[in-house]
Image (cartoon, rainbow, N blue to C red):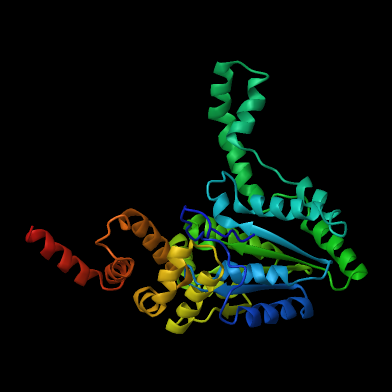
Amino acid sequence: MTVIHDNSRYPSILADDIEVDPILDFDRYSDAIVNIVKGTEPKFTIGIYGEWGTGKSTLMKSIEEKRHDYIILTVWFNAWRYEREEHFALIALIKTVAYAMEEHPIYKELKPILLKGLRIFGKDFLRQVASQFISEKGIENFEKSLLPKMELLSEMDKDTIYFDGINKIQNEMQKIIQKYPKSRVVVFIDDLDRCSPKTTVEVFESVKVFLGMEGFIYIIGLSHDTISKLISAQYKESGIKGDQYIKKIIQIPITIQEWNIDDVKLLVQNLVNKNILHTRHREILEKNINLIAKAVEHNPREVKRFINNFIVAHEMYSVDKNIKSEQLLVVQAIAIRWNNFYRIIINSAISHL
C-alpha cells in the first residue's frame, strides 16, 4: 500500500524493499522464465545473476507472482537467515519446503515424508534429555564420552540427507505429476551473497540433492563473482574452482542487464511519481534528475541510498536559510561521485578557518 505524505510535516525515506513496479525489461525476463518453468520437465536450476542491488530479488518476486497456475507451488528460502543455524543448511531448506507444502492440498501429503526422517542431535537437545535421568556430574561424563560420538553420527547422517528415504519423496512426487502433469515445486533461494563460504556451499549441496528428482525447480539469485569466490575459499585445500562448481549446479544462467544513466533517470522519476516521499523532496529530486543520474552508481539500491541521504541532510540543514536545497544536493553528489575532489575542498576549507 502506498502511503502519501503530502499533508504531513514528517519526511519519509525509501525502504530497501522489492520493487512492486520494476523498470528495465524485468517483465520480459520474468515472462520468459515463467514460460520455461511451465514448459520444461521440472528438474533443473535457474541462476539469476546480478551484482548487489541490481534487482535479483525483484525479478524473482515478479516470477513468483506470474506463476498463476494453482498446481505450481512456490517456496521462498532466504539463505542468510539460517547463517547461524547449528545444523547443516539442508535441514532449514527441507523444513521450509515441507511447511509450504502443508498449506497446499496437492502437496500436503509430502510434508510428513520430508519431516519424518529428520534426525537432529544437537548438544542442547541431548543435554536436556540427559538431565532428566542423570546427575550434573553424570551429564559432564555424558558430554565427554557420548556427545562426540553423537556428533560423529550427525556428520555421517548428512550423507543420508537427514531423512528416511529420498525414494519416498520421489515416488510421491511422481504420483502427483501423474495426476497433475503440470505440477511442480519452484524453490526460490535469495540472499545467498550474504552468506559465509560454509553456508553457501551447504545450500548448493542441498540443491544438488534434488537436481535429479522430477518435480523440483530451483531459482537462485546470486552474484556470480561473489559466490564463485566464496566457494573457492571453502574448497581452497581441494582446489575446486567456484565457477566450475556453479556450472554443475545451474543449468540456465540468466544475467540481469547492467544499468545505465537513462535507466537511473527513469528510476528516479518512477520513485518520485509513486508519491512515497514528501512533496518538498519530490520537487527537488525531479528538478535535478540529470544531476542525480550522473552522481550515483548505476545501481537501484545506490540510487535509493543517495536519495535517503539527501533527505536526512535536507532535514538537518534546511532550517538554515543560507543553505539552498539544490546546493545541498550538489554537495552530496560531489561527495559521492567525486569523493577525492570533495575531500580536497573540505580539507582546504578547514585549513583556512
